[in-house]
Image: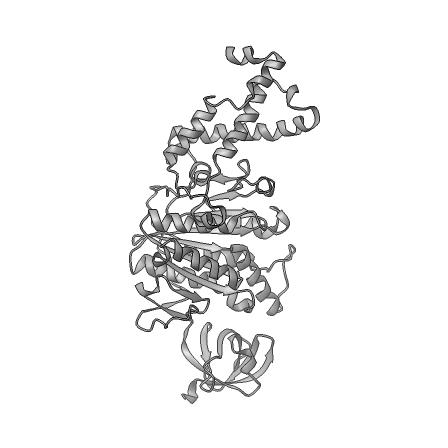
Length: 458
């Protein structure tokens, strides 16, 4: 034991411990350990005075007591990473939690990267095809960008994330990283088995922080995932697709941690550091000359309230987002996309071409009109609509149904084979619907109203 690096615990308050050092001060974020108990991990958080610092207990709180000795490792939290990390499951602190052997011969990668981020100033936009019709058509996202799947509980965010992992790993080159923030053990186990059954586990690194772990640990998982992503991008020179499920739990973990540190919340009830917490993480998902980190983030919406301050803050960092509707999920259409509320900054003529752009804009117009027509139909009935309104109403229904599709990761539950749909096939389908190649209005019903000849004249 190096007595020059030794400190003693003076007081314990929850996960906060006051530690006194004599003639020495560890750096902020350094990890302290116990020579007597390897389960104890404490991170230096801030200085209290000239002799005392505040540490955060990441692990082993039950073993600590006043007078306990802690030794400075002189290093911040790190993990060992190599190509052997593919197919493995990490915890938030960089430890293996899949029951396999630890990686001891990998590269040392620090969880917090304090280096200046190297942004690629090349303005070229490369669209990633996902094989999921609604994403590729309505909210295309670029390599190195950020896309969010937004919705309340039970609308299909995680299923959509899992399908995207499957499609990217199976049909594209690159590495996938999945970070489950505050997940239940069952959910992590199911995802692991799904990826294994679909033969894509060997292209994926999994990370989980569980719901029963303290807020300090859960708040680190996003940064641990970012560190692994940076390793594969910068050292292995790979394109990385990084999934966060979900980013709202990351915000919650930081909010709980802020309360444990006895900080005053903001007016919205969240931590005063909400914006900086998100910015510190989101700015690590960037493209440089080595490769790219493309981020896909599931976003839980509390009480389906899109005006929630945390949701509005998260939206600022996303290039594209897909809003999932509870009403559409109720009628069994998946993915349950709300077309009028979904958006993408990439959806313009320059990036996707004139044909794609015009089809998407026309689809959004049809659906905005559909929402207005639904209210009229509920009161007066469909027969009171004009012929053009009836046609537009049924076009919207056909496009909504067309944009649904069976998923590979749900085959065992639905007994329906999953489908990867190319963007060109999606565009052809939407185009044919908008060009009236499919008649969604019952001709017999129209004949009884004496209107069939009017439609044929149109």
